[in-house]
Length: 439
Ligand SMILES: *[C@@H]1O[C@H](CO)[C@@H](O)[C@H](O)[C@H]1NC(C)=O
Ligand SMILES: *[C@@H]1O[C@H](CO)[C@@H](O)[C@H](O)[C@H]1NC(C)=O
Ligand SMILES: *[C@@H]1O[C@H](CO)[C@@H](O)[C@H](O)[C@H]1NC(C)=O
Ligand SMILES: *[C@@H]1O[C@H](CO)[C@@H](O)[C@H](O)[C@H]1NC(C)=O
Ligand SMILES: *[C@@H]1O[C@H](CO)[C@@H](O)[C@H](O)[C@H]1NC(C)=O
Ligand SMILES: *[C@@H]1O[C@H](CO)[C@@H](O)[C@H](O)[C@H]1NC(C)=O
Ligand SMILES: *[C@@H]1O[C@H](CO)[C@@H](O)[C@H](O)[C@H]1NC(C)=O
Picture 1 (cartoon, rainbow, N blue to C red):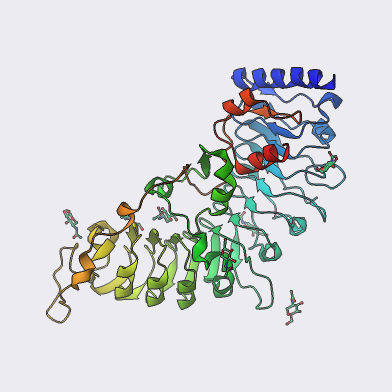
Picture 2 (picture 1 turned 180 degrees about the vertical axis):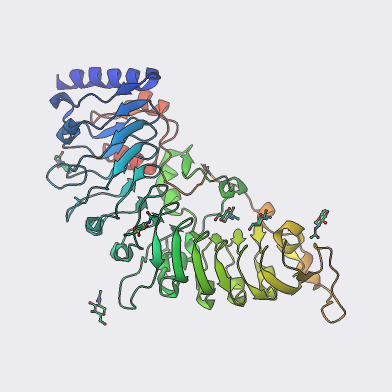
């Protein structure tokens, strides 16, 4: 039976992937492996280039070579119709690939997740990505891409995660009013680039994926841990639920550490499902908009190291889930709001604003500013009273990819062996979907 040869091949690959702690290279993919659909070989010490024989893997749908020591350029066949018509996940993060990202994504391709985070790619964002109509996750973070903002990706109807952090992106982000604007986006990370100009109001108006409260997924503090590892791992217990949970991934905008200037637009208050907002380390001026009080799902707000002036809007004290607030290194003045979550912030949330007064900073407010906190301000509801009844927990959010593909697992098209499935403790939802479709 054909199956037997394939099983033999799986076993070899499994042994390889578990024992390969010395340097290995991906020698070649023979015709034997032509019907491989899912190749998971992350977390090994593979070195060298991806062999061009990978282009023989016509039926491949998931290719995960992440976290190895692979280098060189990536073969053009990845992404071309005719070569790999069914490729939906390409995960090469944490390797040493360099050169241009291939510009070979043709109309009708089925790519859903492209993770190239943490490599040495330079050159521009390939224009042909506009053909990836199914693309949900694009992670180009931690590379050396020197380009302007890829506004033309705004037409991609499924794009939920766009990560460009730690590159050399530059220039203004000023789309024209009649363009399509990332209507499905949930996670936007532009941090640590050289973007300049005003904050992109046109986009903030059109991120409808961030305006839907039914998208809100409560997170635990661990996920907001600032030691960003740039990956969202999913630990799942009931694997049937993974898909829906991932789809309600939380909602974040990180535009920190750029050169944005001008005011924070009022319109930001429309992004009501936003859970993390970071505009820190820019040159923003003007007041903190009181409309931010409408961001009732917000868990983390960082506006530090800007040039914001005026008072902290009292409306912010309605943000019941706010766990992290950083307004330090601005020119804010007046009374710090009291009550609710504001009782939990320490003075390091306000450092460097010499004009702020009241708890928790040491400066007392003058008569004019003094104000009794409203009684209702002290009720103790908030994130801590939230029932944590989830069936599984998302771990290790970072700015990067979205798949928790753990160590090297390999699966083939030949069904779904239970023992193998049991070994797979942490799977990305795409993989899961594949497995399901094998029933
Ligand atoms: C791609 O997937 C379709 C539907 O699942 C299948 O019919 C087709 O044979 C696959 N193509 C290749 C080259 O495996
Ligand atoms: C980006 O490219 C421009 C020219 O296209 C060049 O002037 C600039 O120095 C480059 N930036 C970096 C950081 O490489
Ligand atoms: C937007 O409008 C300009 C002219 O106002 C036009 O040149 C351009 O093609 C339009 N773009 C789209 C995507 O419709
Ligand atoms: C909000 O999201 C839910 C589920 O994700 C969807 O059914 C609903 O249509 C969305 N509402 C709007 C206004 O987009
Ligand atoms: C906001 O971004 C900066 C880097 O630009 C980072 O250092 C900081 O921890 C972030 N703030 C929060 C609350 O995550
Ligand atoms: C707030 O941000 C500043 C730098 O912008 C940092 O030094 C400080 O530790 C941060 N405070 C908190 C509470 O995160
Ligand atoms: C912040 O609080 C610490 C002790 O909690 C205190 O030593 C420090 O002086 C305070 N700093 C300011 C600016 O109020």
